[in-house]
Amino acid sequence: MPSPTELHSLDAFLVEPETLLATFANLDGLIIDARSPEAYAAGHIPGAISVSTYDYFVPNTKPEGMRAFANQAAALYGAAGITLDTPLVVYDDDTGVRVARECWLLEYLGHRQVRLLHGGLNAWQQSGGPISTTASVSTPRQFEIQHSSSGFMAADSLVTELNHPKRVVIDVRDELEHDGLDHTACCERRGHVPGAVWIHWSAFLERGRFKSAEAIRALLHSRGIKDDDEIVPYCHRGARSANAYWALRLAGYPQVRNYIGSWHEWSARSELPLELGHRQNR
Image 1 (cartoon, helix red, strand yellow):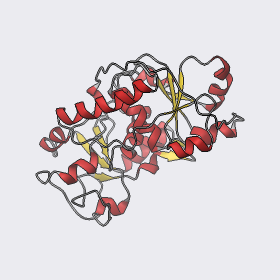
Image 2: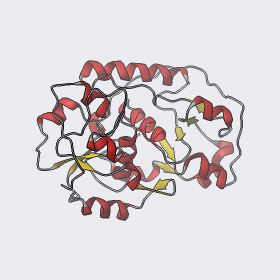
Image 3: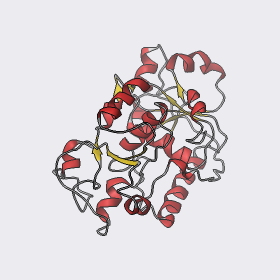
């Protein structure tokens, strides 16, 4: 997978269902179904492997926490037959949060050839793609981690520069979560990162696909976010924020970092500041 600074290489990150269907018979690599095991069992792209780290929470974004998280994910990927050089096409029901988080994590671990099926299984079926209920397995391989930290943000780095004039933190959760009025059971505190701009993650999507670069840039401009700002999205577990991460990357923003620990970590660390109240522009 290309590094976040190599924006030209992102042209190949999205694969359209028609393209996958046309090359399906001679596909080099693996197709990864990032949905739940139950959804996979109900019907999936023929030959797809069920692999999902969606329920793996980051214990904390300190080095030791990220090592534990990375090792857990690498063990899962290796067991599924994935190596750093295995070409992958990853999908969800549509261009959802599960596939976005999986692709982000693979990039973070150093994978070099991951692609996202634009529109997901829904678009695949609409294009005439076949569906199977036969489970597929691969021969286990060794997944060697080669960290790529350019798209990663840690809580400690974020809190030390909350007022940085060229960094914008965006909260992509639901409005109640942002305002501290939710009832998320695993979060010890409610609210949002101080100064965060609220933009719901779905605002970057349209009919199960990413919006155009022009539409995404217009949305950010309306919230006072400039083209050369560093943007740090976060949510609860780093999945909705991963979706925003890819949308922003694909729109051409050169500096985007996913705060993967997100509110699950931030709320648990009492030394980290928070705010309550309504959304704000920058």
